[in-house]
Every structure is written in C-alpha cells, then in structure tokens.
Length: 253
Length: 365
Image (cartoon, rainbow over all chains, first blue to last red):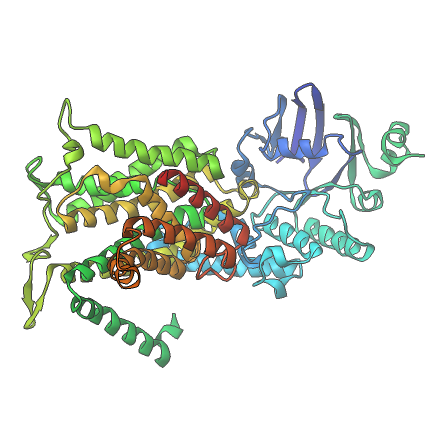
C-alpha cells in the first residue's frame, strides 16, 4: 500500500478564459492533515469540486488509493472514500439532524425498494444499524441532543458539525473540509480543532481548506498554497510560513 | 410495532374498520351514484399517493402523471376486452399494467434527469399530452386503441368465480357492484398506504428526500441521483398504472378523453392541497377534491333556484371557480397544505401551488 492516498497530477480547469486551476500537482499522504490555503479566488474550492467529481477537469487527473478517480461521478467518489463538506453549508434542511446523518450511510448500505416494502429481516436489521451508527456520529460531534431537530433550525456551529457527521457517515478515507471555521468564534474554532485532530487520530486523512492561518499552521502536517490557480509551494507549515512568495501572495508582511 | 397493540390503538383500528365497512352501505342509501363517487375518491387516493412519491418525496414536479393512469387503463382495456379478443385474468393484467406504466415512467424520467422545477413541469406536461394524443390517433393504419371512440365492453374484475360487477347476495345482504368494488379498492388502498409509509422511512425514501432538499449534497454523500430519480418515476408510475387498470375494469369503458391535462392538474392539486410529502394529508386532499365537485354538482342548481329563481352559473364553471379559489386560499393561509407534515417547508409547497394555478389558468383558457 502506497504512502500517498491522493495524488493530483497536473489538474487544470478553466471557466471560459479564466484559468481557475493551472496544472496543479500535489499529493496527500495517508493519515496526515493537509492544508490548502490561498487568497480568495485562488482555486481552492475548484480543486475540491474537481476532486469530488462535481466539475470535470480540463486536464490532468487524480489517483486515489492507487486507482484513478473517475471524473464526473460524484457518487462514485463518495463510494471510493472521499467525503466532503461545503463552504456554504449544504444540509438537507427539512430533514432532522439524525436523518441527515442517516442519508450519509446510503453509500455503505444496500436496502432496496423490495426490502423496504416487505420489511424483511435484513432490511430491519440494516435500518437499526443505520440509526445506531448515525446516533453514534451525532454523539461524536456532540450534537446528539439535537438529533430530532430539523437541520435548518440548528445553530450555525451545529450545522457545521452536522455536515462533518454526515460526511463521516460515508466512512471516508479522505475527509475534505471546505472552510469549516468560517464564521466561528475563537471558542468554536478551538472545539473544531479538537474535533479534526480526533478524526485524524481515528485514522481518517483530512484535507482542509481554511482562511484561518493560525488554525492551518497549528493543525496541519503539510500545507499547499494556491495563487491564481497555480501551486506556489507544498511543504511543512514552518517552511511555508517563511516562503517569500507565500508572504507576498497571501500572508502579508 | 409494540405500541400498535396498545388498547387505545386497537380500539382505534376497530373503529376505523367498522367505519370503512359501513361506509358504502351508508352512502349507498343516497343512491349507488354516491358509492361510485366514493370509489373514485379511493382511486384518486391511489393516484395522489403515487404522485406524492415523485412530487412530495423526490421533489420532481410532474404535470403529466395522468399518462401513467392512461397506460394502466389501456393495458387493462386491451388485454381484457373483445377489442383484441383477449381476456386475461386480474392477477396477470394488474402486474402487466403496473410494469407497462413503470416502463413509461422510466421513459419519461430518463430525458428529464437534468431538469428541475418549472422546466421539468413543462416537459412532463408535454409527455402527458403526447400519450393522450397517441391514444387518440392509434386507430389507423392499424387499429390499436380504437381512437376517440375508446374501448368498450371491458371485462370487470373477477377473482375466481366471484364477479365484481352486478348485485350479488353475500351473507343474505344484497351487495351492489360498486359496493363490491369499494371493498377491493379499500384493500388495495391499505396496501398502497403501507407501501408508501414503508418507503418513506427507508434508505430509498431518505435518498428521495435528500435529492429534494439538495441534489448536489445528495451526490456528494454518494447517492446515485440518476438511478434514484428514475426509481421515483418508476414507482410513482406503477401506482398510477394499477389505479388505471381498476378504473378501466370498473367503468367498462375507456377513451382518451378521461386522461386530459386537467386530470393531471387535479391529482397534483390533491397532493399540494393536502400536504406534499405527508401521506395522511395527501389522502385527505384526494378525498376532498373528489367529493367537492360532486357536492357542488348536486347542490348548485337547487341553491340557485331557491335564491334567484333561475340558474345563473352552471355547475361546471362554478366548479373551476371554487377550485381556483380554494387553491388561492390554501396558498395564502395554509401554504404547506391542509394537513402538512410537521417538518414540511413552506417555500416548496408555495412554488408548486403557483405552478398549479398558472397551468390551471392556461388550461381553462
């Protein structure tokens, strides 16, 4: 088993004349927390969307867990073990928190229409297991007391947590978080940090897009910086922080 | 499941059972016509529950749903009438009808997968009309559907040697044809309701609702939205197909006229007025909207005669007026439907309401 979980090979994406990604190549190792930073519009989310199959890259591709990742197949990316959250939270608003996480179990369960109609023993057992696992995950992100509330009625911080729980429900090998700390205060960010570290400890690799430089530098094992769609540097935080190009492009003097 | 056996729910079930058994005889005192209307109400409950899978659960606005009803009805008509000289038994035709409707559901579903909301509504509306026009014109060069004349002398439902048409003596009671059909329909309706409830709280049901709420997020958690949407179309359509088959057998006659756009709109209105995605609400909507026009039909003329001494507005146009007014009032005061699911969002129902009123206005013109 190779050390590299996800390798991006010269991934390119343009929207009309705008080159959102210019041949970005990077590699994420198993078990690390990998940070992706850069100014607004640098192409971080575009990179995410290409990786999770929501966009089709115009060039290059991804190798995930030793196998190439199919473009334009978001549900297959999830099946292979890539889960994500969204920059602007995308929950199933009119479903309860518990149901949201239960939907996350979809890809790891099998019950079909016939099973549901007949309520076969296997279906009932699977349904109970889904519920059980979903409750555990809600407990894991510490919102189990909101299980029966509609997702849209949860507080902002809880919605972020719920989205992470839903992503974890797919049993990912790689969890991609798109600006999870956006709009959070210092306490919430601290809690989030503990949560992400816990997830890594449980064996899931984490890819983190974030604007909170302190959080990224403190949390990540390695960091990549994007600017104008191109990779500036990919290294450990200590090196990245001192890099002249990064300071000019993003960190400021 | 245990709380089903509590004394209170046992008493409740017993009461409902007695009411359901007594209903056709009580209604029958007012004439067999009312029993027929009652049967139609149950038939519409079928249709509304089928459409509810597509519109209420999966959030796909379908304005051509009646096409599947038509497919089911014509399947029965062709397989059990002198038209082709075929006389298949019920246990063969009902599944074939459901399967045919299912195939048509996938046929309609597959080109519309990328469409949502208004665009989907227009395409499905077109599909509904295409089916009706085909039925209207498939009498030459080869006569398949007998065109606008429709198909007559369709076999009634027969199970074993028990015929559902005509009056027969059961336990010393005279039970009329419509009353017998009523019991068949109630049995099927209970089955359909159970299937719906089970689907709603299943892995597939949750996937439908996830697509309704946020398709991109649904994809991101690994739901194959294409297949799950097609499944919704197929399931909804097969309910429509079964309802169509029973309709055909009950009437003994089908013609393309029964499957016009306004029928699609009526069924959608039942779902929306009752409460999208909420099974008891949908049932209520179907029953209300079947009885309302009939009550008007019987009441409007006498009331106007006694008030003005002459008939100012004929029942048919008043029906559309009252219907439109009801939609507007529900939209204004109960935007989530008369009996909404506790968690139902307002915006979505409102959107569907607007679509229904707009298309109704178009259709009336």
